[in-house]
Length: 213
Image (cartoon, rainbow, N blue to C red; front, side):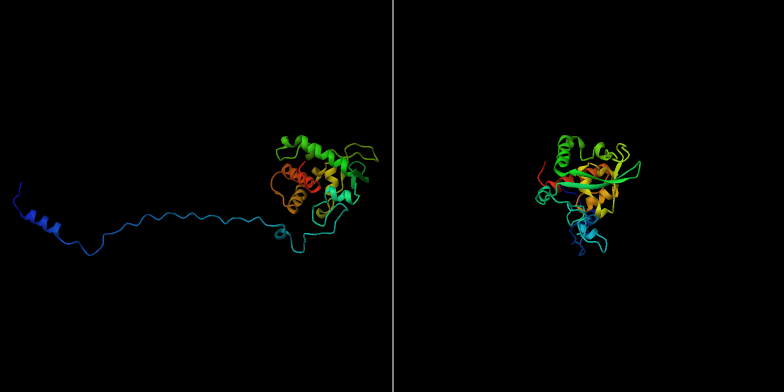
């Protein structure tokens, strides 16, 4: 059906047949996404980077069973080859203040600790048990008081770690001393004392006997 032409129809035809403008149609840029800024990855510093100026990785061995590395003792195999079978440490009575030495048989005492770990490790959940957190102390040979002879602590570099390990008395150490051990043996050293104490026992156990228990 044909419609008569009219001024309005003619105007429509003129508009529809006209050439498009030279200007391109406007383009809409996609919305700019916010860029996430990620924090730089923290690298774990090595012991060399942590040491204070003037400090070195090696030190004169404080005991015959110690190595030249801080907080490190020789293996059982090495000690046996050197005929080092007795480990000595100094204690002081909390009652009478007398000081004296205590000797431990290296192999007998290590066997005690190893058996304790084998029996209780599943229940520890990487935390030191109460027996390690609050260790029983030796009796005083002068005043005959029980559970009163506390190991004499020295500077961190001279702590008698093997003596404390064999007597299961590492729990007398301060948290800062335990962290010192973990720092120089490349162990994780954050967390509660029972966590760091557990790592100290396990670290010394591996130093003495690199093979798994």
